[in-house]
Image (cartoon, rainbow, N blue to C red; front, side, top):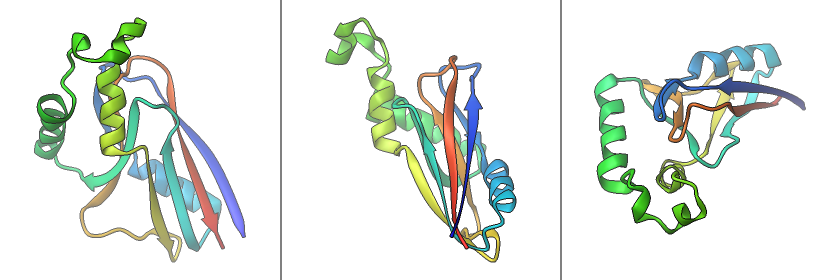
Length: 139
């Protein structure tokens, strides 16, 4: 069995961003030499997410709107966590809702996706250095 690990680093310009990282994941699968297996892509911070969805700007707008207006509005006074001096409780809740990792099958040395699927990094409390682990495992 082969294992390959790579870290992606981010420092977003905005507090919230969605970034398509599919090409970097594909590059690491290729670099690993794995023909059949899995790739784990996981945010290593509790205020970020990794998810699979469609690369469509209207959908990204809808996701951000849904998080802000339904899941966890950015209202620091609203959350007990923010009594500690933080202001990012909403980011923690958004990460819990969207999820912090995905596992994608690798078949014949390629990500085995459905027709519109891509891998995304969701930053919910950015403008500081954060990372994602890409771990490819298989044969």
